[in-house]
Amino acid sequence: MALPPLNPHAAAPELPRPLAGVKVLDLSRVLAGPWAGQILADYGADVIKVERPGSGDDTRAWGPPWWGEGSERVAAYFLCANRGKRSVTIDIASPEGIQQVRELAREADVLIENYKVGQLAKYGLDAPNLQAINPGLIYCSITGYGQTGPLSHKAGYDFAIQAEAGLMSITGNKGEEPQKVGVAVTDLMTGVYAATAILAALHERQRTGRGRVLDASLFDVQVAMLANQASNQLIGQTRPTRMGNAHPNIVPYQVFPTRDGHMVLAVGNDGQFTRFCEAAGHPAVARDARFSTNPARVEHRQTLVPLITGWTLTRDTADWVALLDRAAVPCSPILDVAQVLEHPQVAARGMVLPRHNGPHGPTPPMVAHPVLMDGQRPTAQRPPPVLGQDRAGWTNPPTG
Picture 1 (cartoon, rainbow, N blue to C red):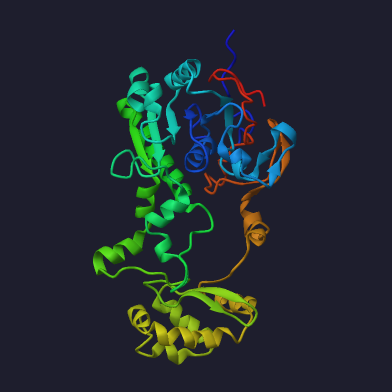
Picture 2: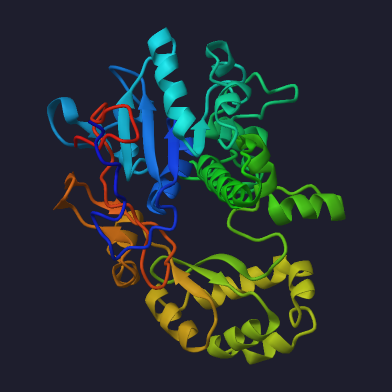
């Protein structure tokens, strides 16, 4: 007898679930693909995560720290990108496993994978083969360098992509070692771009009934993420370099020392600069022709920044933040991660989901989905799955 399908409204009917009824087959691991799958799960999709028997997703072992005990112990890293999913273990290199994936793909709306180019074709699990049995399937491949081009054969790692696609050349202090960003930002943004492309394809399929083949690469995403820095090079032919915390196009827009630490001053226009100078007790500086406009301030950066540094060293960070907030001048303290997660704004916005015992078992503390829908967060209530806890089928409810 067939069991009833997963009801994405059952756990929390008050939460928005715009993708209720959408079936996602997630063959990806580590971060970029799972991040895309988690976004879709947060929006209400039924996501089945296919993992290797025995070990599962690589990040299950990327600890400490750990959540859980014994055989169900899992690294905190895994938890950040797999909320709301079901887990099945399938050996896709075996004939039985290949058939299981094909059966799941036949019923899926979306498939996400991040295998090396051509690897799934060896098993008949590539886009042409699966779309032959499911023409409406949206097949999203996430790779390091894309399906084409001279580097398409290479595996993709966020750190390496940050280096090869330009981000590290503009991150760090001038004259010092290039730096990567403190989180795997290229992986994360690739996951976001993949999710938006999937949503666009789902919208289009309502008209055409046809799926799409999506080719998302970390390299392409990182090149796109160069944003104004790439535009500066293309338009100005001035090669961007490492500038520490300074901005290539805006001044003053960087970290400044204070009497008890540091702060970020982010003056975005001439009006803000005028108000900053007035609040600091130096209104005449805003009228100086060298500093009255942003282009002039960029030109005279080497004169202005030491001048402002002399001002900022006269007050504590908290005093500057309070003073400049009243003057509507963007200014912030520099907080560590623990301070951020305990911040009253984070609490007010409900961005931390506390540890609790939910209808699907113990749920670890997690960061919530960042977008509100009609004032509510579409965050999946199901905790990240125990490896292989579910049976391989859309009509079978999860066992965990």
